[in-house]
Length: 97
Image 1 (cartoon, rainbow, N blue to C red):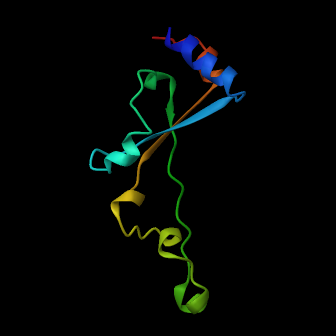
Image 2 (image 1 turned 180 degrees about the vertical axis):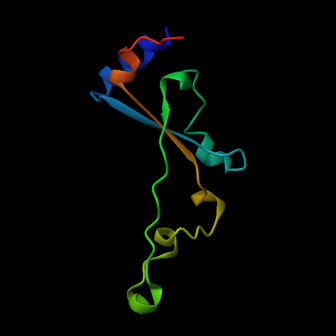
């Protein structure tokens, strides 16, 4: 049933893939209202985080990137979260147990 539900969502939004964020427990309730837990997590694959670019701040001086770009997160609303991904290809494949 979950497989049909996900395929129908993809069909309705005319996309072939979906990204789904998973926020930590201590995150603000306003963000969690828009992202409810799903029972289809076994169809999703975790996305590995990208490495941050190491900037030479001494050379850049006033042209240095902002704190968000540097990975210095000032508050909890920008806190790290897990990201999962699924595509029509993953949903259509049969699970081998």
